[in-house]
Length: 272
Image (cartoon, rainbow, N blue to C red):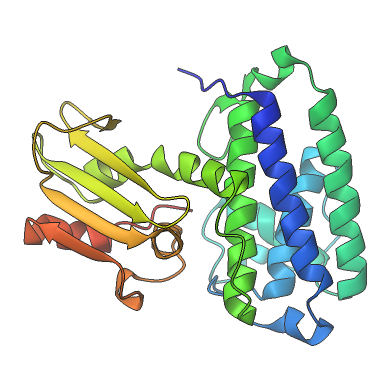
């Protein structure tokens, strides 16, 4: 089953996100580009190189030549990570000013391609990081991914922001699709159990997951959830995105079955 998403809304959210990241970097002193982020082995520069590299790849470009075996790096654990790292290594010596220019250029080109894309191509199934799905779904994943990396940069340099808006809504929409997997597979909730995620903030939302033959998001539960997880949106995305453990945040709490609650906290991180 494929995911058909409204083209204009997804592209607008992606454009908002890419613009927000570019604006943040415009105000970032060159010295802060070497600040480590929560992602192992990646500083600010690496996060930007990753965004540039992915957008360039989608335009059919290849990473700059490099003789470094990226598979030997401890934080490279799969083929997608190796592909990402090739861009980071290839762009490592590019100064911040040029990185800013590259980001704006490649994202403008990519957005132009998307806006010119016909509906058939937008809805065409193909590769996405979440498996075979439409190009529209891939672009919602791009919004999620770029927003997460913007937040990586913001957290690293102490410049919080961009925690509401269309891009954040799209990022949360994408994260919600993984919660059945998180509850049923990663945390191993048994059949008949359930979880409610109460995400506080703007945008806040409440999401229910019921485990039947398989775990999935449902509109409502018949009674109280087996486990209720409450968190601020930013804290939730940092934990679910594998950036920090749940105990790094005071506003991440669980109520209900203590064993299942502990398992949910321990297995909430799901991104590759």
